Image (cartoon, rainbow, N blue to C red; front, side, top):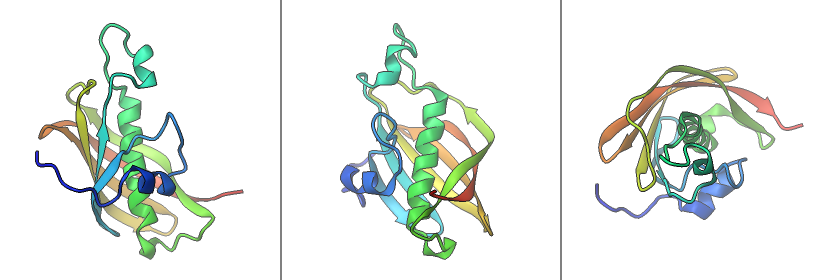
Length: 152
């Protein structure tokens, strides 16, 4: 794995997400092709709050947080995809998780590379496919569905 300058740093990522501490699961974005794909990074560290209980003697990144990193990466991609026609008060929320597979445990010290590709958009929905790798090993993969919502 080569070290590259991020396309979006953490401060820029944070401005594109609705989530806040401790739920921000994307550190940087390396590649982004609006309407098509994104490659984002999450550095997993041992001092993250989830490791207090999952599991105290053997820290393993919860699958739900791997899915959250996948979803947040997709959200950043959507925010940069003008063809979705999102208005300032609209965003896409996670609506379905399909064929999600967790293949290898993710532990502190790992660097997750989250690759997401938009498969289809139609009206108020979007379908994405993604792969999460650590050191070129696929640790998780699946599909997520999103639906358009308006902030109240």
